[in-house]
Amino acid sequence: MHGLSKSIVLSGLSPERLAAALEPLAPFRARQIFKWIARGARSFNDMTDLSHTLREELSAAHTLYGTTIIGRLEDPDGTVKLKIGLTDGAVIEAVLLRDGEGRQTACISTQAGCPAGCVFCKTGSLGFLRNLAAHEIVEQFLHLRSIGLQSAAPTIANIVIMGMGEPLLNLGELRAALSIITNPEGIGLSKRRITLSTSGIAAGIRELADTGPDLRLAVSLTTADPALREELMPIARSNPLPVLKEALHYYQKKRGRRITLEAVLLRGVNTRNEDAEAIANFSRGLDAAVNLIPWNPVEGMTFRGMALREPTAEEITRFSRELTRRGITVTQRFRKGRSVSGACGQLGELGAGDSPYYF
Ligand code: SAH
Ligand code: SF4
Image (cartoon, rainbow, N blue to C red; front, side):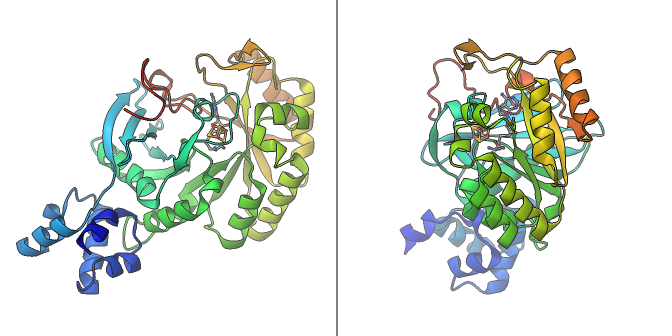
C-alpha cells in the first residue's frame, strides 16, 4: 500500500479523488489539503492547521508534487520561461507573460514534444515523447504563480494553452487539470479566462463542443490554402479544411462563442493576397477574428529547402489590410519573450549539446 500511494501525485487529484487517496483520513482533511495545494504550500510541513504528527505521517506516505523547476530564463520585457523537470527525466517548458498593465498570463504545455510536426514550430521539430499527466499540467500553473507573486500583479489573470504540444490530443488529462484549476474551493480561475489553441483536430473540437469545458477556442489555421496547409501542418492531412470548418460550425452552434483563427506569418510563404482571400472565405459563416502572429525565428527551420524567415513589417501591414478589406476582424499578437525563446513556437529550444528532452 505504501509504495502505491507514494506513486500517486496529490496535486493532480480532484477533491473527491484526493479524499479517496487519503483514506482513512476524514474527508474534511482532504479538503484542507486541496486548499493548501491551491494556495501554494510547498510541503505537508507548510500545512499549519494539521497536527505535527499528521504532517509527518502524510509526508512519509504521500507525494504532493511530481515536478520541479530546473531552469529559469527571464526576458527584459518581463517574460519568464521555466524549464520543468518531470520524474521520468523529461523536460517541459511553461511561460509567464506580462502585459503593459502588469497582468500576468500563464502559457501552459500539454505534451512533452508534439506529434503534429508543423514545419515552422520548434516543439514540432522535437517529435513526440508523451502526454502530460494532470498533475504535470496543474503544477506548471503553480510554479508560474510562485515566481509571479513577487511582481506588482499579485495573481495570474489568464491561462493560454499554447505551450508545447497539441492540447486536443490530451484532452482527458487537460480536462482533469483544468477542473482543478477552476475549482472555486481551490485556485478558482474562471473558465472564461482560459484559451485553448489547437492545430485543428476536428474530433477534439467536437468533443469540446459536446462535453466542455467551456473555454475560449483558438485554431491555428496558418493558411486556408489546402495544399499549402498540408505542407506546413502535416496534421491537416487527417483534418482537412472542410472537416475542420464543419467541426467549428458545430462548436459554435453548441457553445455560441466567437473563435480566434491564428495565422503564423511566414515571409513569402502564406502572406499572398490569395492567402488573405482564402482565409476570408474560410471564416465566412463563422463568428471569428483572425490573430496574426509574425513567425518567431527558430534556427535551422526550413520550408521547401529554404530557411524560414520572419515577415517584414510591410508584409504584415499589407496582409492585415487585405483581410480587413474583406470584412475580417484582425488582431496582432505582440512579440514577447523572444530573447529567452519563450515566444510562440520557440519552446523546446535548449542549449547546444542538450538532447531535446533529457538533462
Ligand atoms: N499546438 C497548439 C498550441 C501550441 S502552439 C497549436 O498549434 O495551436 C501555439 C501557437 O504558436 C500556434 O498558433 C502556432 O501556430 C504558433 N507557432 C508555432 N510556431 C511558431 C513560431 N515559430 N513563431 C510564431 N508562432 C508560432
Ligand atoms: Fe504542435 Fe502546435 Fe507546434 Fe504544431 S504549432 S507542432 S501543433 S505545438
